[in-house]
Length: 136
Image (cartoon, rainbow, N blue to C red; front, side, top):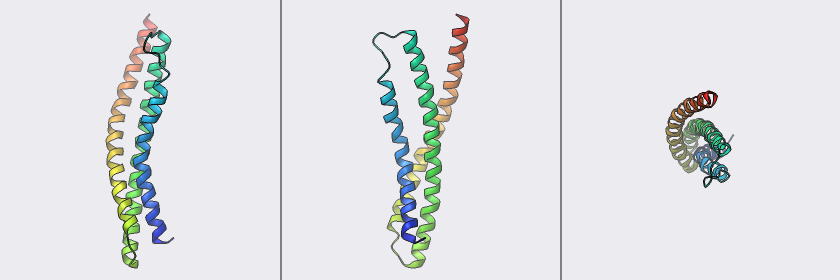
């Protein structure tokens, strides 16, 4: 594999680690459009809780994937940078891939940390709602 293709692979991992969390806002806006907030009923409340749980789990998965891909991008880009330097080739793509991967890893790590907390809170709140519904 040439150093150029390794640099490109590191760049792609960095871009994906930054783009993945953006999908969350697109998904959440698409789902929230179907909830009736003007005249809510019990079905709307159930749909809202289901949406909250779904988005929390999706956030957890997407941020975990962004974190993992960012780490893979850092490893790939740094290796490609070393190979390009040894071969006397320009290492611009590897440097850009490394920077994007680091930024994606930081955002993915922060998002993963917060989503872990949100997932625990959502699970606890959902259990309380189920207990309250059974008591009615």
